[in-house]
Image (tube, rainbow, N blue to C red; front, side):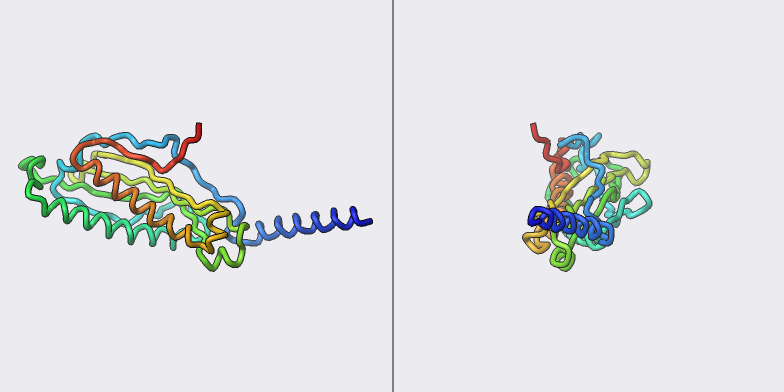
Length: 208
């Protein structure tokens, strides 16, 4: 009798969990097309060959798989990223040797992030659904393009996530940290490829 009651309780718990997954807009499963490598290839040339830089907002077109909290996540990354990149560009322009690597013909480099996947469980969502919210994730391609010719100089992909357990137990604090990490990765890649084309990490951790 006791064994049957235990089985019934487990069955009811499993059913409630399944129903919660179906009912919650966040869903239990986070969809994400991960990068295939932990390293981005180098640009075809160093960014210092350009004298001007144009920052674009994140492209959130049909190719972007927007899940729960996507726009909040993308807004957070965009704001942080633009602050970091504007400061970086200002430092480049202010440097004494800013024009050393630039040809007599001025060139503009367009920097355009493109959303692939975005999902973020904020504090409120974590408090209300806990582990049922699943992982938070952001995947962006950042296209560096010659404004005049349209030539793609670099097209790296960046990936960051917060797993369901750290997100739930931190009440969403680590979900917010993910936004800062993403913006920093993009700024660091841009900085490191200014003097010479070296590539950089995608954010994917490959376990041997």
